[in-house]
Length: 71
View 1 (cartoon, rainbow, N blue to C red):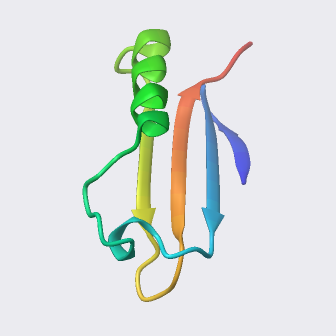
View 2 (cartoon, helix red, strand yellow):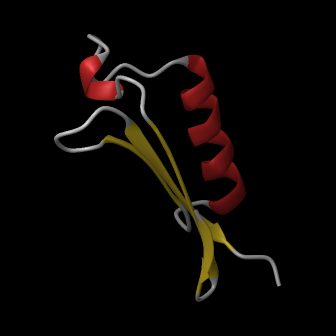
């Protein structure tokens, strides 16, 4: 899903894989996620949100991204 939310672009992506809480390595992040977080911080400072969460009571996870929308 993607939508404009005021001055921000809000994107959500979900999957049906095991999710971060079920992979056996809770709290662990790989280099790809670490690089993504660093790049978002450099581009937007505190004006962004990037989270990954398991879907409660189901398989899968959801990535939630909120960044400033271009005009």
